[in-house]
View 1 (cartoon, rainbow, N blue to C red):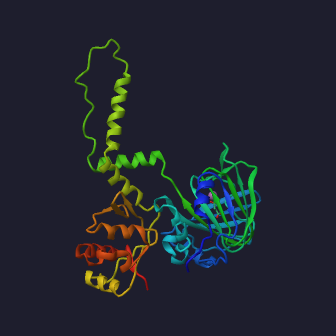
View 2 (tube, helix red, strand yellow; view 1 turned 45 degrees about the vertical axis):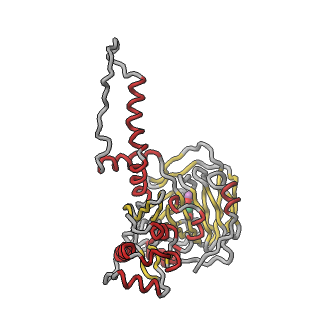
View 3 (spheres, rainbow, N blue to C red; view 1 turned 30 degrees about the vertical axis):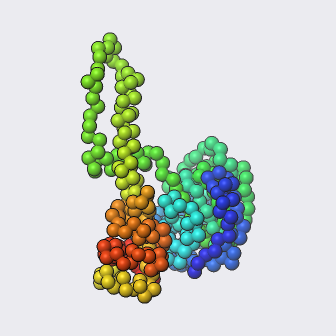
Length: 373
Ligand code: SIN
Ligand code: CO
């Protein structure tokens, strides 16, 4: 089903995005859960799916990672089951992410879903990403504190909590409500009635991940092989010092590498289209011929992008799942990055470009796009 999100995006971006937490009451009117607790439990039994079980009894926290073999003996209270990137594995749940394409795709991380029984939750903590927590079935009380320096500690080796905080938001969420929380604001969800919660997360890369990924790219592509040189060296009386102008030159050597627009784009395109969680890739069997694809599209059929596949257009260069896509048709390639479902209208003239159609066939055969049944 298509989810209708009632949200004034320009106002939201101006007032709240990355600035302030907010409760958006009834943002999904007549909300229907895309998944059942049983289906979620089934996913948490799959080795490809990242899942966790967190429980809290008599002040003691426990946490374990999936895949789980069974869920016996958990009792009726005080626990929560969480699965990451459910949008990659469960098509109806992926529908819940679509309305958030008002935000740029490259900022999206994944859809995490939690199931919690009364008293369940992961405890007070801070996240380093923006999150829209959608309330599905049940109800939970959410408390959010101000973004202040806070002590963090581990009540269990797999959990990072914060000290108690004074709430600036303290509200019960009902089905269809959304709590938006920017990075760094402590929060805690306490379950009243057995609940499903959907967290649509947006994560900005941090500097060290960027630098380290760029360094890998430089190594793989043999960049920056030139050595520091100083033919203008003059006699100095202190051999033990590195002079300021020398530090400037070293920094310049490094920034020059980062400043090459081609390398910067080629690296970033690969980096940002690398999925952070596994994808449910099923290559087409038997493979298609370009003509079959062309005819099907001409007949009005549509190709759906694999959920979670990252397709981004950076200044006209399209990258798909950590590879550059050397497109034979730039508007066709742009359509691949812009729409999650493509048909003849989205593809336009590219549909009659044999080289592009053969590239598209390759993508379909890889399992990156598939026909909508
Ligand atoms: C949850 O759904 O319990 C966890 C969401 C969060 O706090 O990040
Ligand atoms: Co959180």
